[in-house]
Image 1: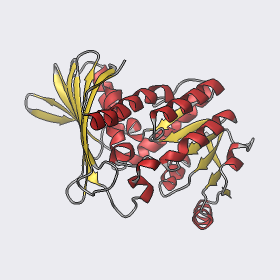
Image 2: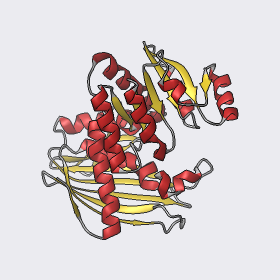
Image 3: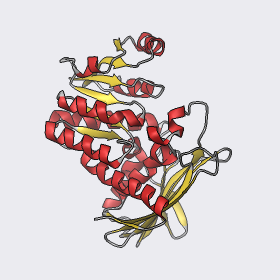
Length: 328
């Protein structure tokens, strides 16, 4: 049995709690939130022990691992302290709000010998699993071009103020479009070697980005783009189109995975879920627990995600400088 503490029990924590309750090898020992009233509502609903200081969870010998789901700029200190206390860490995306902090977290977990996994839930959706299997089997041949799209309503009622400030790691790319960037990098079997980006805040006028275009070059010659927009009004589209030498794939978690050949799309079995987010979270927690129990590196590990974050922060650098950023 793996005993979990949840640090940062905000609105999305209910989804995590409900997913964990579906896994017999995991037990929630305590949850932490600074707001005592909100904490009481959560603990009453799920019959859990509540704390207002995260150190009470990190220093608890009855807790084996922690979920860190705080605002982005608070990830680093908590994750490093957790690793130092020997706790395995499931860290909500993004890993951190600077590349230096991402590396510091990863180094701390590696040095302490604890599992570090990042909450890139899209990697654990039924659709992603089917798409990855299709690509790895050679069904569409060699990947040539990829187009990822992340277009959605941005400043809805649940949007927090810290999402709109640079100092706290806000903005659409770090908060939302990171899912598509991460999935794109996981699906293409090659390292990113160049990044060019252009970003805007034209939709809302906040200090952080709410739209952008990112172009990636890969070691084996593949090209990819990410178009992201946080609009005021429109129609959501979250998808990845992958063009190979023998066919194409379209991944849309709300519809499934479609194999394209001869001007026709075919829905692939097992790729559609009416609640892909719940299935993704359950699969994510299963992967985390199995990695701990078997002493192995998980999918969406700190080591792998650090490479994605290098790409992401290179995009910010490119957008600021107007230059293509070369990666080693």
